Image (tube, rainbow, N blue to C red):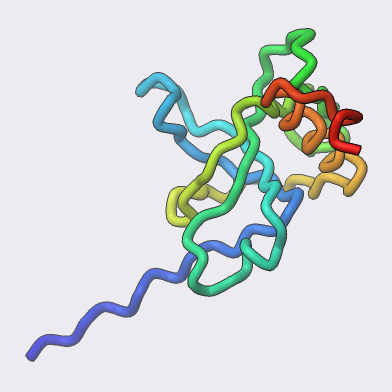
Length: 130
């Protein structure tokens, strides 16, 4: 009887952290892109939860109402970027790639703006939820 390798330890991302991933919707030659984790830490840190919710970031700046501009100083990334609220996605933890440099964790205010952008991306105005 052979020994089994130990199970791979899943990353433990926190809400507001920036990680990298190769999204299946991206062109195959595109490098891993930054994403911001938006799921609550109860889900993110649970040992049996193997996915998180994330919003992709893009350096292609637009005037899309479901995009939120994040400045370099806020993220720690090299360029200003946008959180694309309409592209919120479920990401397997095993696919997360840690940043090569220290990045910042987004503030609660920025996360609320991103949540409002997700709602706008669904065709609902945030004030309609009140």
